[in-house]
Image 1 (cartoon, rainbow, N blue to C red):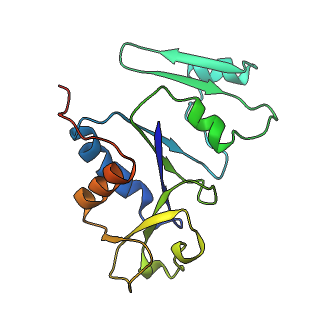
Image 2 (image 1 turned 45 degrees about the horizontal axis):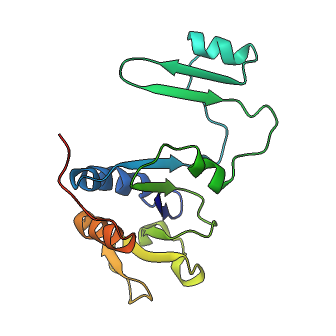
Length: 171
């Protein structure tokens, strides 16, 4: 599987870019999955639900399945966080995995930058950043720079960089 990261400071627009890229990439016939790293405790289960009760009672894993989707909840119970490689290995095979977060890991990444946030660019100090997507014009960089609205350009760049062949979308 090909992997591309979307990295940047909090509030820069990483999630917004990914949610705009996904329909374009999928519309070109690519199967795409995502990995999102959370920097804090998170919970996708809700108190009062059976799956929550199973987890709270001590289950290591709870798989919830329906006709539309399934989810596997795994409690770490003191074990270390999954590494980047372990997280990717848990996914079913697809054409492309987009990773949000893991900004310090050594994988190819597109930096999302908003100069209005007052944070410095990561690209000058990270050789794994292969492009920047910015909310405002930037001075020339060592990597290609896209505007926040050039989603089609970013998608084409990802397809070319990852050596993927766009194909007709499957109905």
